[in-house]
Amino acid sequence: MAPTTHPCLIIHGGAGHITRSSLPPALYAQYRTSLLTIHRSTLTLLHTGTPALTAAMHAVTLLENNPLFNCGKGSVFTRDGRIELEASVMVSRGRAKRGCGVSLVRRVKNPIRVAGEMLVRGDEDGGGGGGGAQGHVFLSGEEVERLAERWGLDVVDEGYFWTRKRWEEHRRGLELEEGVECKGWKEKIGRTTTVGEEEEDDDEEGWDSHEYLSQGTVGCVALDRHGTLCVATSTGGLTNKLPGRIGDTPTLGAGFWAEEWEEEEVVPRSLKSSLTQSQGARAPLWEFLVPAAVRDALGDCFPALDGYVRVTGSSLEYDSAEKEKEEEKKKKELADTKRATVAVAMSGTGNGDSFLRLAAVRTAAAMARFVPNCELASAVTRIAGPRGELELSAGERWGGGEGEGGIIGIEVRDGEGKVVADFNCGGMFRCWVDEGGVERVMVFREEY
Image (cartoon, rainbow, N blue to C red; front, top):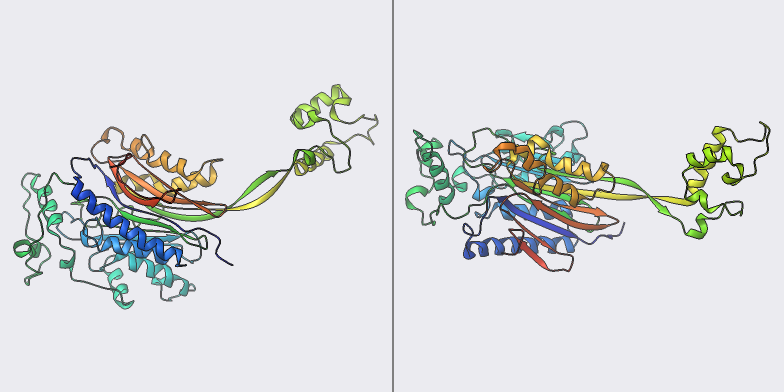
C-alpha cells in the first residue's frame, strides 16, 4: 500500500520542578539546541520513509548519549551510588510483541537498543525459543546485558555513565540526611582499578545546586508515512532511588503505550435522501423529529399520526417484531456507517510511582477509545494536566514531587496525526512542529 500519512513527531526531555531562576538563558539554550538537533534529524528520517520504530529509537539513542538528560550517559545514581537504567518501546501495529521494556541495566550503553531488539526479534519467536527473549516483553538485570552482548550491542564499563554533576547531586542529596556516609565512586562499585579517576582528575564542570538538572524520563512519539505509531522512552530513574526500584518507564501501560483500533462512524445522508422512503413515498416530517417510542404511543390514540391509516383486524396490524424491523430499516435509510482507523501513542515523564498507581498512559488511551467523543488531547489533560488525576492522586503529599509529571503523544484519525502534550508541574521540555509548520521548543506553558 502506498504511503498516505504525513509524518509527525514529538520528543520530550523530562519534566519536574523547573523555574526560570533554575534555568538561566545559557542552560536553556543548551537544551533547546539539543532538542532541535535531535528532532530535525529524526523528522528527516521519517520524511524519507524510515519506519516509526527506527526513527523513535534513533531519537532516544541521541538523548541517551547526551549528558544533559536523565538517561544513558546523563543518568542519576541510586542511593548506593550505582547506575540502574530503564527503557521501553512500543508500536501501534506490525510487531508480534507490540511493546517491550528493560530495567536494572548497568552496562548497556543504549538501553533503548536492547528494548528495540527484543521487540523486533520477537517476530522470530514463533512460540518457541527464537531470537526475541523467548517471547518475554519485560526483562531486567544481568540477563538484559547478556542478551545485548549476544545481539552485538554496545556494552560498556559502568564508569562510562559517571558525570560530575550527577555525582555531586547524589552526594549532596545523601549528605542532607543525618549520619549518611557517602563513599567514593570506585569504592561503591567495588573496584580497585581506576575508572578514569573521575572524582579527582576530570575537568568537567561541577554542579551548582541552584541550577536545574533534568529529571524524569526522555521520550519520543513518531508517526511514519504508513500510519504506524511508535513510542520510545528511557530514563535513569529517580535520584537516590533504592537499588532495585523499577519505575513506570519500562512498565507497559504506566509510562508508555501505543495501540490502534477501528471505530464505526455514522455518516448522515442528504436531507433529500433522508426524507424519501424506499418505496418513493414521502414520510411525515414529524417522524424524523419525534422518538419512535413516543410515535408508537401517540399512534395508538391517533392512528393518522404514525404515517399509516391503520386497518383494524389482527391480520393486518404490525406486531412488535415487525415494528422493530421497520424502525431499523428507517435508521439505515437515514445514515450510512463506515469504519475509521484510530491510533494513539504516548510517553510519560515525572514521578514514576504516581504513573504506576494510575496506569496513567493506558488510562488516557482507554478514555480516548471508550469514552464517546473524547479526543486524546482531552484524555491527556484529564490525566496529566493541572488538577488532573496524577495531581489528585498525590492528595496531601502534592507539592513535594509526588504526582508531578506530563505526557506527550500523537493521535491519528483519518490518516492525520495530531500532537498532544500536557503537564501539571513547573515545566516539561518538549519539541515538535506545530500545525503551521513552525518548529517549537517549549519548557513552560508560555514561551521562555
